[in-house]
Image (cartoon, rainbow, N blue to C red; front, side):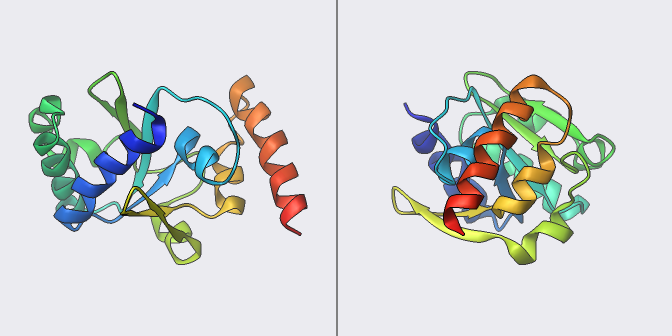
Length: 151
């Protein structure tokens, strides 16, 4: 399956649960027009225990059994929690310096395979990539070019 299809499946479950989240990371790069690969689905969540519970329950329902082993309060203590594999869902409570509450008002919703996906805005995505990692630096270069071309 492609990253877009996998993301759509994960997001459909999150949407059904009423979770508040944004798609970030490699899938967000792809949805913003950057042709790259990714091994996981990254989401930035609203930092509340109730929301973390909705996220975990949704992931458990779509085959991420490890999600049921986490308590919502534990998720909130970490900047990132990796759930499952092949592909993993990386649940972020903060992505570099970007928090859900900051980014949500600027997010856009895109349709992938009939699923409405809340996508982090391009400027916020670029900010999440300022980690110093080589892959993130490469992403920033391409994302800045996409931004320039969009005018």
